[in-house]
Length: 530
Image (cartoon, rainbow, N blue to C red; front, top):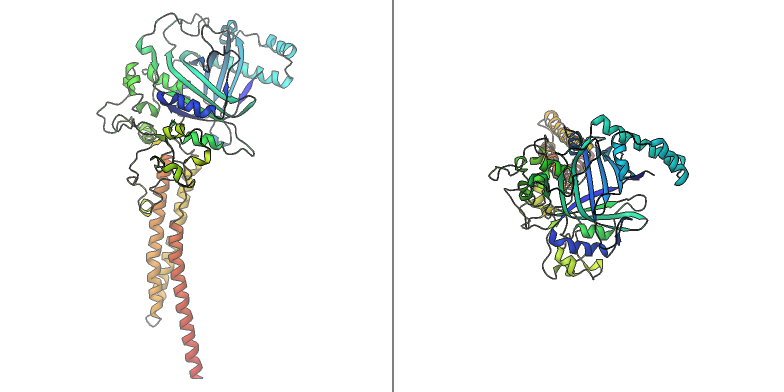
């Protein structure tokens, strides 16, 4: 039957030297989950995935651009040696802001039937009857399976898909059986292999002969392990478990937003076919492996002004975990960006739980037997720069934090956020213009015989109206920077409205007192005249 996965997935890079520590941290909460094809000799299993695409790399560019409905088409099998059971899988991207979720669908065939599927000769009607009789599938499940198979068979013919890229790695999966709330996979010894350059023999061959040697430009070995945290949250379980958050902030994980093995392999091994490349190829830690695989043409020169490529690569330069060739950050710790560093010996345990800070990987590992309440992790997700008046007045200044941190978590952005920021800017600007109009009207209609307090009241409102306009511009630029960097945390300002509101209320209160004083004087004068 068709299996559909609706998950929220976050991907991280893990240094090779931290793999054992990460495994230990996860095993405290989740057991190793072995596939049915696993021999049980190891906690990891060799996994091969052959991705299909056409000569224009249509699927690659669709996935890179995150176009609505963009698909990834792959054939996957587990274990060493030639495949016996093959999973046909289709991943479809959908924008979360539309209310839809990306989905992965798959069905299983024997290896001998792969050619039939690829050549549109798969006996769907016979298999349908077999599913209904032998496997006891319901009518709805059979219909769903048939729809998926026909769509995947059709897309191969319509888009002229052929084997393009192969990923190979040792996968360790962690999951509580029959509970997919939290599922974690750790891929080590990752390499990408080009599937171009050999005769497919009409679909009979759909992956390279493992006996034949590979040229250096036909394989790229990734320098890090890749960790995927997959969450199925809903209803009462709207927040991830605390231990997952602790692991994310442990200093061992480097989040790489929307990282894809397929996209990375195509960009590095097929540089002459790609029109654009992902932002993470400019990361200093993967540069050497890319050059070694002959993909240097997609990289900027080492003496480049910015150290990153143009366009989106330059815009998202701050998302590179280890910096670029110009500003390498190979020694930074993986944690949420712009958090306070409290990692000196003994300081974490002495500090209160509510202090904004994070623990290092060594600290997390050495204190693995301590209860979670005794270990310090980030609770506020706000940078130390923003927690000071200077940081609020100068939001683009980040020099207050001397410890350079790798951005390992990013906020999801919906298109309406940009318009909401503009709308807020216009509302604040409107308030400032309204105050200015009131002040100008008071000055224009107040005669020389009127009380001096009226003129002082109007003159007090003028700088306040100017303050509203300047604050509107400040808030707009500050929040635009937040949206650009997508750093998690509060995107509202709790100081500005309080300061401006207090000043305005103070002026109004003083004017009220002066008016009361004038009324009292007037009543006193009228009483004496009578």
